[in-house]
Image (cartoon, rainbow, N blue to C red; front, top):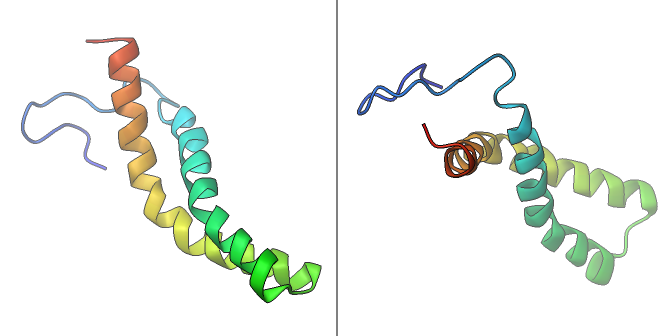
Length: 85
């Protein structure tokens, strides 16, 4: 990510560890996106427990990098609403 916004020049990272809460946001987003995979595997495919866990892990491995940046953006918006500059 950029250090500052190219338009308004606001500094994104306030202090060390600023984005630690975005990990929780990313986890929630990823879990919500993995739910359809869980439902399809559980109701239609019915794999063994190991294949079930492997299917969820593969789905999460594809979803997590996509949600990484969005989780940070959502966290910055939530933080700005709670503590405006």
